[in-house]
Amino acid sequence: MTDILPLLTVSIAGLAGLAMLTSASLAGWRGWLDLKRHALVSEPDLPRPTSAGARIELADLRERIRKLEAIAAGIDL
Image (tube, rainbow, N blue to C red; front, side, top):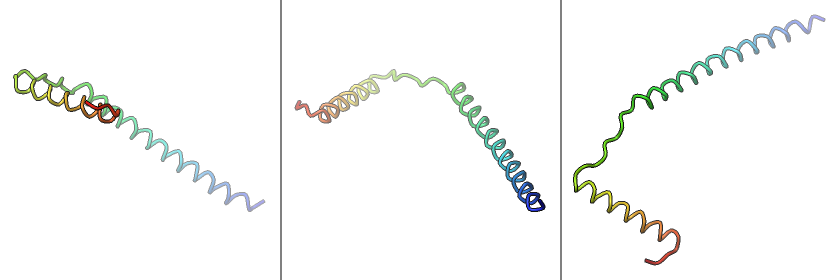
């Protein structure tokens, strides 16, 4: 009968420690989600390229991507 008391004490202490760890992890998770939500809301919209040089560079990059996709698909240009 006296062998149960130390086992019960260790079990209760373990459960209490697990509860504290879970509570701290949950608080950290909620804080991280709030941080990411704030970052998404406060992020300014990215400006669109307005100069002709930027448009030409963007068109060139699109053409390169199209060619790389064609190479990956095995199509000869």
